[in-house]
Structures are given as structure tokens and as C-alpha cells.
Length: 189
Figure (cartoon, one colour):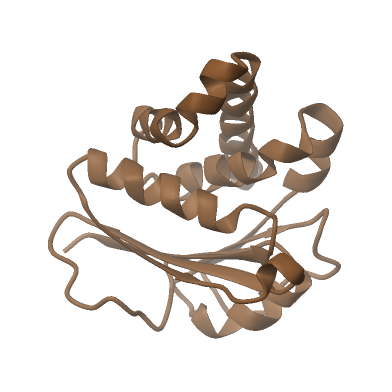
């Protein structure tokens, strides 16, 4: 069975839960089995927000998992909270412009992206999470770009209609995030 287990973790306000919702909606619309378990508490006051997602071709038999195929860490506290979900088969992504240190875990690969800085300097702080969604999409290839864009339309369509420039900004952020992973892949080859 093809099943992708994803852990997304960051500080409250970084849009971790929004990324997860768009991701699982895209998977559902693509005909896949999906599962999303949010884990948050006081994140709006500065705590860590975690989202557990699964996307599979067949029925997902167990809602919880011990290790993720991909673990996204968007703050130092997220690194501390999520190291336990990493094993030698995991891909770890962290934001080099937010995290003050690289995750020290044994894993398949660690990818550092500069998403927060790029969002703030080149686009808008509001699309930081969409850049991360692009990174996730390119790192996993679990869904197609069109599936994600359709899910973004469902989630953000009213905002896009009110301010059409937001659609282009979000799509640009998605492409930028995907490009970050492609750059890392080029460096490896």
C-alpha cells in the first residue's frame, strides 16, 4: 500500500493547520484516502502547532503513526517536539530563516529552505505557509500541482474573489516553494 505520513509543525500563526487542510482536501479530491489530525492548544499564544496527515491509495487502517515519511519543522520548538517522529527513512525539512539550528536527527535527508525570509522579502509574510506547501509537494510528489491549486481555490476562493491579486501571489508562493526543493535536487546531482 502506498501511504505517505506527514508531520507539519510550527509556531501558532505560521499556518500549519491551513497547509494540512489544503493538503488533505487536495488528496480527497484526487480520489485518495486522507486523514488529518490536528494537535494544537495554546499555539495562538505562542505554542507549537502540529498537524498529522496521511495520504494513501488504499484505506488507512491506523489513524496515528510513530514515524513520518516527511517531517516539516518550522521553529526551534517544533524541532524539539518532532524529532521523535523521525527515523532513518524520513525526509526532514526545516526553515533556515526561522530555526536557529539544524535538526540533529538520523534520517534519509535533511532539506533546509529559506521560506520565511523569502516570503517576507519577495512576496508577503502571509504566504509563508503556501511556500511550505510547495516545498512539501515537491519533496513528496504525493499529489499533483493541479490538485493543490483546486484545493486552494476551495479554501481561499472567497478571498481570491475579493482580492484577485491574492490568487497570483499564492500561486507564485506555491511555485517558489516547489522551486526550492528542485534547487536542492540540482545541487545533489
